[in-house]
Image (tube, rainbow, N blue to C red; front, side, top):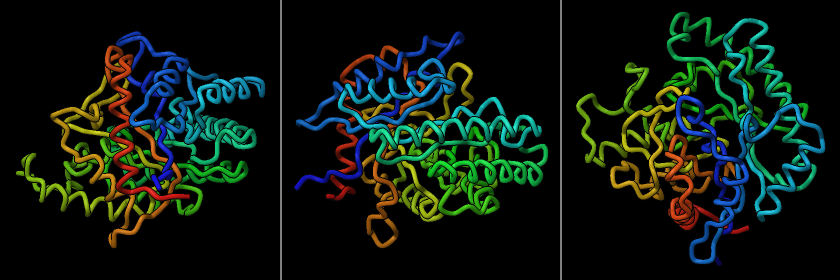
Length: 343
């Protein structure tokens, strides 16, 4: 029998992230849903979408009717809803008291929507994603003090999430202060100390840059003289990284990376997302995903019921081609074939 878990989701926020007045126009949520629903490979399709709860795709202050309209819009395409991105960037987690209050309020509103979608039956699983909403440069002005502030804000956010039956996943990216290296991820999350409520969101592209020590040379994993093409050394480093972060991981993004950083619009440089078929891609997507989805003994962790493709900052020309999404779905199917299960 064909594996039916983890469910395969597409992210809708790449239609927004890196877009805007100083880049390309945002791609409408309706378009992202249509392209996702139309993708098909050997009779298999995407099971759902992960959503960013921010403009222009969504108004966080919408009414209950607005939440119902969102659910109906997704359901119309035969898709479910999974993880949600809380728009916390107006209030840095290590900011002023008012900014940190805003951060927690954004988490509260997102968790409330998440609970409503669960109650409607369209959201069987998933988390609410957060980050520190702070730059590594700002964090570096007072590492100990700022990490303490981030942890305090996240603890308050965890208390709110618990009220709504939600869990939070902090995204690891080199552009988020206090999360910009794998060691700092662990230090921050251990300081929060909310197991069961706070976990890690691993993105295959972003976490690859942890290996190279971007924005945190002291935490580099691969040798300074590392050359792409040395697959054995790369895998050795990746195994070390995944062993450290896997126990925290409760949400997972399948992605490709070419070993470089990239940023467009207002988005800082971070691990470049590449197309699944990019000849410069450094990851063996299906194999390397297994290091996140299986423990050191090779057993499936089943730590999450769905996986999501994230491809932020692709050109609109690329994102509006149906073949792009078919190729992405094909890569996701291979991950599930090698590391999935039947329920």
